Image 1 (cartoon, rainbow, N blue to C red):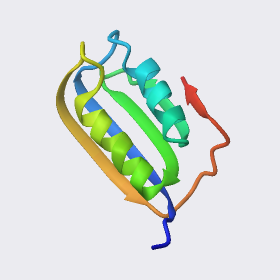
Image 2 (image 1 turned 180 degrees about the vertical axis):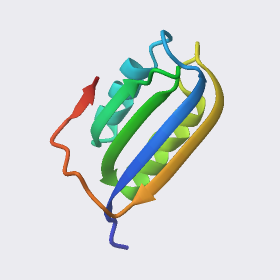
Image 3 (image 1 turned 90 degrees about the vertical axis):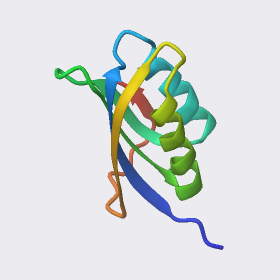
Image 4 (image 1 turned 120 degrees about the vertical axis):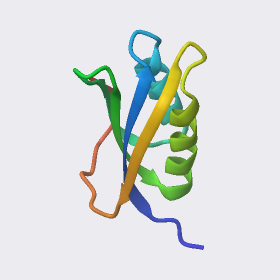
Length: 93
């Protein structure tokens, strides 16, 4: 089984700003060895774009659907892609 590097874009809606979402996301991304970024959006959502092994991205997506304990997730939209940005690290923006 050859694991492939993929790109994953996720937008998380709900009570997701001011609850440590980006900082816990950073820790999770580091644990999973995935690179990219996570940021708060003006509409109150959180947007993250990450790249890594498909199984690691799947785990990250599962975490995004739960978030930190103080977050209330209403909706999660995501897309997987083979088009890579070749991020060198994971950043909280």
